Length: 401
Ligand code: TRH
Image 1 (cartoon, protein in one colour):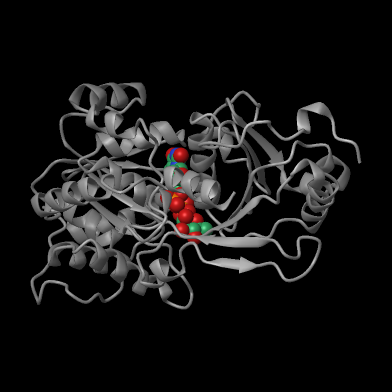
Image 2 (cartoon, rainbow, N blue to C red):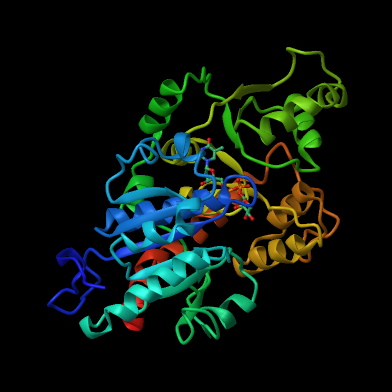
């Protein structure tokens, strides 16, 4: 196979991977986290000058998460239909990539691997190398993460036989791959003050009367009804900003029950609710920056809540085998969470956690806000001191090349 000029290897060796080409593969299992995390990764890489092709089997959430991404107007990122990765002729027509990222253990199409392996073999005298192949795992604070991070796994069969896959684990400690954090984020969050909050609320049509602001992005937390009833009957005026989908459905389903538990009629009480539309990721980050307390879920919004540095409660993605309880425990242990926070997390998620305040009831009204705020700010500065995931990934790739 003769190589077109634009595919010939560069004369100079790669340093800091200038303008390298990345393939990111994403298969959506459920909800928005798979595509949400993969998109943040792609956008972060592109903002640092790299070129990214994102292959996704369901990229439709990008319509609202990242306006312009599907239209091809996002600089540096091309979104492609997963089905095309099975098309050998199409794959062979693409410039070869330096890095392949399999998001969350999704398997790259065999046709894609075969076409790239053929291409690399054909160009071996031109020093084409196999890509640095990375399996990006889910975020967890459990101890296996440090043990398994960056472990190689040789490919034993098929057209890529002899190549190596590498496990890459995001995480909260030095021995892990770190957390997604764009270079500009520190400044953004530090600059997210009362003016930005007021502007955000106005732009999104929220009629704020100075109440405590709580954002709600959740599954169906078992304590949602109890929390709503407490906010309705409690002393502190509260405005709940509810995200669309499961959170909205969960609130609507138990609203009447919560009113009855609070002993109130509709229109009474100290809780008002504003139902939000779907927001772009940037606007979603603004929501977390604007609220006094953030109730988040999954993986990506947890990380964003950490960067927002505000009190938060995490609704962990529930797993049938109950593995989420260990994952939640590990997260709270890793950050040395105070007992009040463990108690709130245990109640919110309906799991028993070690280290909860002994017999001391948690308080949905105060939400232990002072303790939560101190903990959140402490975690934020601790995690800010770690290199972010993309910086670590770039170093990792450079070493492997
Ligand atoms: O949607 P999620 O529950 O995704 C989950 C988790 O990632 C979980 O770990 C995974 O196993 C499961 O999917 C399959 O929560 P998460 O991870 O916070 O992702 C939500 C994404 O949606 C995040 O990138 C923020 C984004 N988002 C917006 O951009 N705008 C919005 O209005 C909302 C509500 C969310």
